[in-house]
Figure 1: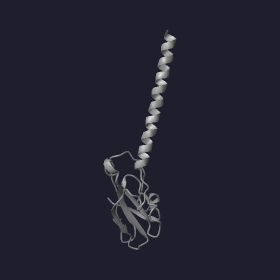
Figure 2 (figure 1 turned 90 degrees about the vertical axis):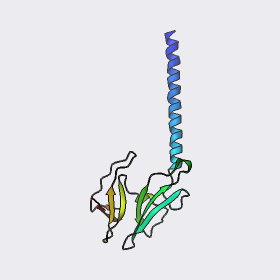
Figure 3 (figure 1 turned 135 degrees about the vertical axis):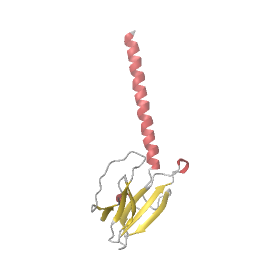
Figure 4 (figure 1 turned 180 degrees about the horizontal axis):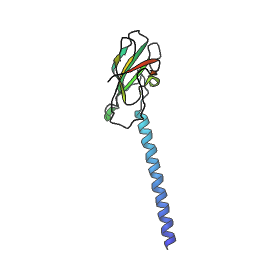
Amino acid sequence: MKKWILIIVGIVIIGIVGIGIKINSDFDKVAEAFHSEHSLKDASFVLISDSISPNKKYKYYEYQFDNGGFGYSRVFWSVIKNTENKSDLEKGLIPDGFKIIGWTNDNELILEKWEPYYEINKTELKNGTEFNGVKINLAE
């Protein structure tokens, strides 16, 4: 009798684990659907601000995505060459924990540290570091 109970409990546990994996993969699909392409052409793209560097070689964008009934996404910052395809903002994404403040007169990008409300991958940037071809200047 104990043997049958253990077999049934084992089957139930395997079923629960299988259902949990299925639910988790469904959540991943939903999250992927809301993770929009970082492009000015994306239907859910909402531009907050943009600015061209003093020498006109680079441009940064501050933007977010409209997720319909779920509201707006977090804010993203991206810096790309002014001549590049503007639909590829993802390669110029500023690392989590930093936001763009503006430009210096020397065409350096001014970044400020900030503490986001979501979990981040810690990235360290220092003054003078080059990011996507632009020199970084960290604000105090």
